[in-house]
Length: 128
Ligand SMILES: [Ca+2]
Ligand SMILES: [Ca+2]
Image (cartoon, rainbow, N blue to C red; front, side, top):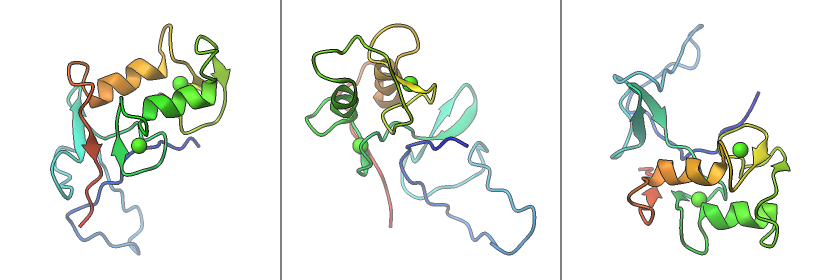
């Protein structure tokens, strides 16, 4: 089982924890969550927002405390072309590697999460 470092989303519904076969389907467009834009629609499927590599309450591309710097720290600032096999929060696309460049890299994955044309956008976790 793989973890996925995403921002926490809070359901706006009462869910019994004692019922059997109780499924919380965050892919459903009918699943109402707290706050604004806690989920994102990708190819018609609702998803939680991924990319929180440094486990704070935000997803940021740029900024000193952003996810990109977390990935660079993991790979090594002087060896950014390396592909590091790992089980890490910085492996944002869950392929088992931290890749900053090349096909299927985590850097572009992160950029798509925050918005390719809005790289300075900060996605904030929303809790009541
Ligand atoms: Ca973060
Ligand atoms: Ca990866």
